[in-house]
Structure formats: structure tokens, C-alpha cells
Length: 130
Image (tube, rainbow, N blue to C red; front, side, top):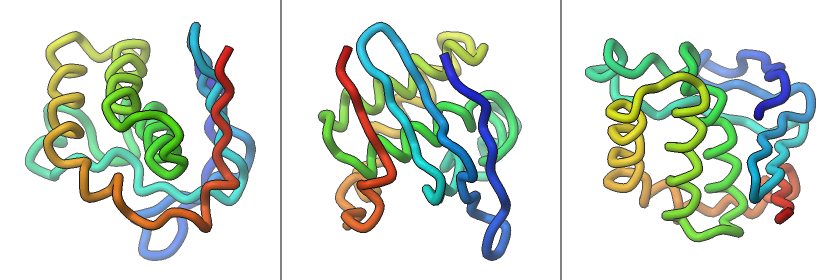
């Protein structure tokens, strides 16, 4: 379950600034992003936009923003963060094939984002275990 997403376009239009708390809750976690968090949306190569969606359109953007927060915080194992993205994609209406494609893509290509220094933003992400 997601709360309402309230963002503003910043910079060159390729990033969004979160204006209000944004939360995702499942049976295991409550994940909240605080105002000031910045995301690049769903990092989907342009060649796949027709299949999955562009970075800020379509249902994947809701889970992608939470996934960016999980990668920022690095409190959970990377694989679990990626599994949560697949779960969120399914919740937002992606079929299993598309959700698995998203999962496979972040497993293959997300490692470079996982190892970024995000220490300045970690205070904008909270992960509570139920």
C-alpha cells in the first residue's frame, strides 16, 4: 500500500523532489521517504520505455521511488530491496513477466547505484520492521 506521491520537477527535468512524506507498507515493513528526498524515477533504458514505462510515468514510478530510498539507506540486503521492487510492481498492476523483467534488470545493472555514497540523504529514509 502506497500513500499519495507529491513531487516537483527539479534541475533539468530528470529528477523529482519529494514534497511530503511518501510511505510504502507491506506485511513486513513500513518504508517512509521524507520531504527533500530526490529521485531519478525508474531507471529504465529508453529502449524499454514502450514495454515498461518512462522514468516518471506509469505504475512503476511508485515502487521505483521507494526502491531508490532503499538503495539510499542500504539497511536491507540489496537482493531484498530488489525483491521489494518486484513486489511493488506487481501491486501496481504489472504482470509477472514485466515485474520479473524489472527485477532481473535491477539485479544485473543496479549494483553501481548500490555502492554510491548516499550518506547525506540517509536521514530522509526510514525503514521500520513490523
